[in-house]
Length: 168
Image 1: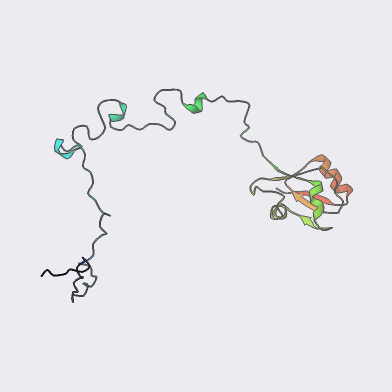
Image 2 (image 1 turned 135 degrees about the horizontal axis):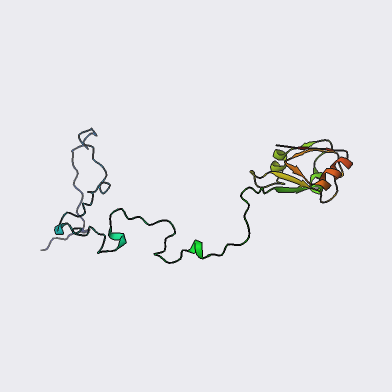
């Protein structure tokens, strides 16, 4: 009579050996984390002999070759093909502008500073200086500090009884 085999898997053997304690003599790097350096130009048996993986001839196969940024193999590079238009002033200042009618939300007699304008969301960019323009009417008396004012803004601020101060 044939023996009946159940399952198909063998039961795992239980060992009474505890895992060895970790010590300096048993430390090893994880498997696959360390590999040997590829040594090029060490003969035909090394897979990278003769030309050392650089291919045959040409500028790119020579020692010391490095291509400059934007180089397109002698073709006119993209940054030189694009047309240049107008004039870019390297010393120009871009202001974030605030109109006078927007400042009517502040309480009477408050000092409005650039930090306060940024905190209330009137100005998004933190680095830009602030210029107050005279669009709309100022109905309350305010002390306004900003980096620049238009002439009409200055007139309207003084008419409303407020003051303006140019911040450096």
